[in-house]
Image 1 (tube, rainbow, N blue to C red):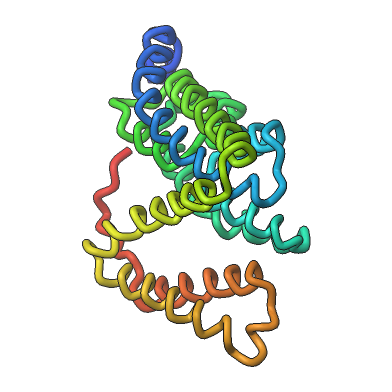
Image 2 (cartoon, one colour):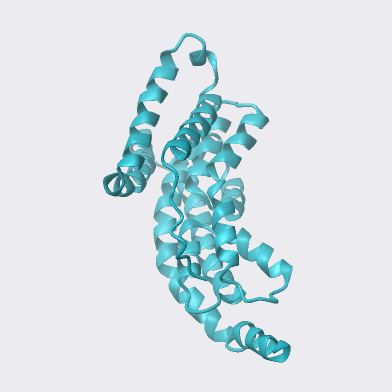
Length: 252
């Protein structure tokens, strides 16, 4: 039984590495194309925060999170404290911890720990989506290759946006900066239409954000602190009132 299990692990992890790399690159290219366009708009925001193209490339290469990077660049632009920037990054990217836990169920038993760690570091929303939908166990080579091609385009898009932000007229730069807000709206609208509870949470975030901006005490807080507090409070209340029911039909 032990030998058979080892053979299954080897079959899932070792043979066909080249084909898995090709498959990952193939599935990662459409993601990469979308990433470049979104990251370009993010680069416009980064330029306003005084981020250089080289720094934008490096930070985007290792972050790959639109909401997290937008929050960080916005806080950098207003000279926020380091603790606020770290807290914002943590709150905005907490979902990746859950994605990592879910992806761990798709990794073949016996896969070395360093592959598991590196695969978790490769996760974005889209790379996670194609990785968990991979037939059978997800080989590290597949996730690595998909993440590599998409990450290069994400980082390049951010750098290109920063460069363009320094060359284009201010009117065009302002117009392009709106594209990122459009992306966020595109993210929240579909789930809001499909789930009334998500709609309530989104509406509450808009309303409370406006109220906190004019409230006597809270308005004196920095925008970063208000965003962090509201994110934690609204998500906690939503999770308490409308928890996701466990159907018990999860797939390996």
